[in-house]
Image (cartoon, rainbow, N blue to C red; front, side, top):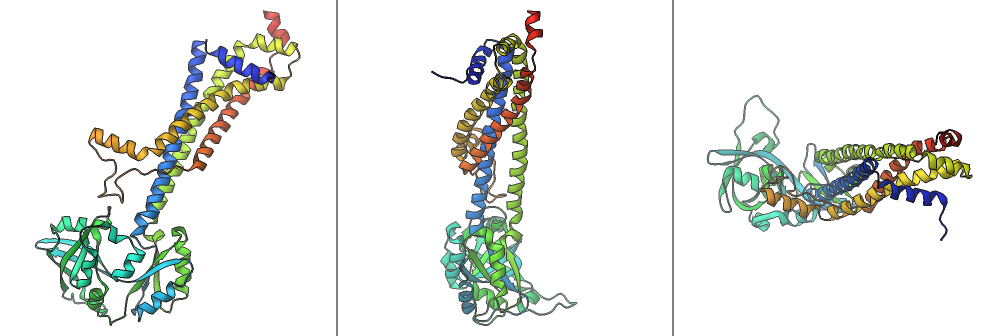
Length: 419
């Protein structure tokens, strides 16, 4: 069977190297380092992809993709304005909104909250909050004096379904009056806890829902008036552009908000961690790859007489050089294959593996009280695998060039004359 001479020599040298203890150890360490770097890089990229998926599918399922809040006057006839907003091709749904900031009180306990007045039906189209109501019912808001609160608020105040709470609102904000030098009395409203939702993170600690009619009464709005409109778009990464296009065709002066302003730091943190980890792990692969330099230099020194004989028999410098390149690249290929197989397996089962580790050590890596998820997500992208493998192979190839080039500079006369 025909085999190119360079490939034949390269594979033969790889097999013969296994008999040399120290050279074999250096070669194995480079292979192990490359495999480890490829494994960890694939797993880290998959974890970052998982966090991005959870950000877009979970966190942004309850956080508004975009909001338009009026500057001074409320929106009149909000159903008409909602229909107008929904005419934009990128808008999936829209819903009215009234936002209030105040204190919730139960006995001696106080908790700062953001009250959100919503329309029950339309809010379920722009938000998945109904799926996170663990106690009580979202539909309880239809009764008017009911409130749905986060589990963090319920825990802080020590309340449960059916308990009465009091909400304290700034009277000036409620009535839209200008600020005065006197501190006005607070507007007090009583609610019955009709539902408790559990989403995770700071949202559970600060957010509460009331009906749009109840919030409008607190703001002294007329029937059909609202403070703003929440928007859900079909592509969350297009939200800043879409919400500005919608606002440009709006008949009111509004403050424009999108998720990149309110939650963009989470996405930026994910991207920063991805970049830092990628650089660090590529350097790990590079260090492991350049162990090949030591291996090949020792191989060249050991095979000087073989190289001299080959050159006297007519072997060209490219043939000799390619033989040692093949020998070195085998470390990169073997390490990449092992690392890829293990990396793909771990990435596909990362969540279960972390859960097993948490159960074994009775600990929790991510706390739902701090983060919006309590597990390590993972989403494997085949493009990340390709890119990682190509990076490892390229670094392995670059590491072989100098030792292989040195092999071509051996003078047969000097080597054979000393034999």
